[in-house]
Amino acid sequence: MARTYDPQALVEGALSGERASIARLISMVERGGDSAHAAIAKLYPHTGSAYTVGITGAPGAGKSTLTDKLISRIRKDDVEVGVLAIDPSSPFSGGAILGDRVRMQDHATDTGVFIRSMATRGHLGGLSLATPQAVRVLDAAGKPWVLIETVGVGQVEIEVAGEADTTLVVVNPGWGDAVQAAKAGLLEIADLFVVNKADRDGAAETVRDLEFMLDLSLDSDWRPPIVKTVASKGEGFEELWDAILSHRAFLESDGRLAARRTKRIREELRAIVVASLYERAGELLSGEHFDKLAAAVEAREVDPDSAAESLLSETLS
Image (cartoon, rainbow, N blue to C red; front, side, top):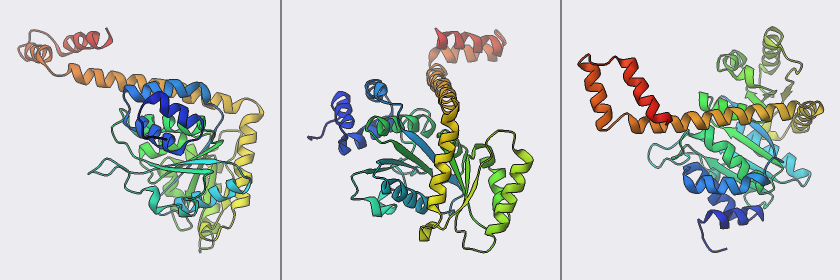
């Protein structure tokens, strides 16, 4: 198709599975703005079918290799899959430092796989708001599975991965790795644990440490299974896939999946409102009116709380 950035044309292209349209729509929602809103509004009725899997863990845990092998396992059943690789932002371009050119190369020519690296770029609210919209693009484009892989374990990456239907936390063998996962807050979001590089010394001890921490902290009716894999050799992926399917069946068995998605929608709505109010507040915290109020507070003519209330009333009006 001819290059276009018209939201209506891109939506039509994405709904028919046209890869260039999908890519441009994801770029659009990364940037945010009116065009992104218009595109998502048109796409939204066509969403709700994809199942999302978040993959997170410490840098160096082998998440990209694991994601690569998981793609292969999904494709073994002739099912299409979309992948969002959540990377840190480049301080120069704002784009993703680790692009899809340097990962998952085995799938580059597979039309049933769509891989995209994402960074914060210009979207108000950053990755935590742009990622759900990118998932919707892949969902509407007919990808029944969407994998969300995060590079780091910062707060944003944990939040993004934890918003998936099923969240995998990847750790490596070694003293303290399970403890570090707990400290990073990964224990709370894990639906499955993957001990990758399980052919190394210390794998059994890492499994034992995770089991012990689960014994201490678990208060739900789902106990995250612990699966050992060797991603570099493709080992353990039938077991991992079975564990993912088991968790999906558990969620779907009595409405838990629908409840989890309802909670996610409500949290997303709150985040959008907060981000929008933050932007509007930023516009008010400058200019002549703000300067006058600040001067009045400094002159003891009005107290800070009253001045803030005056500004807030304008924000909400």
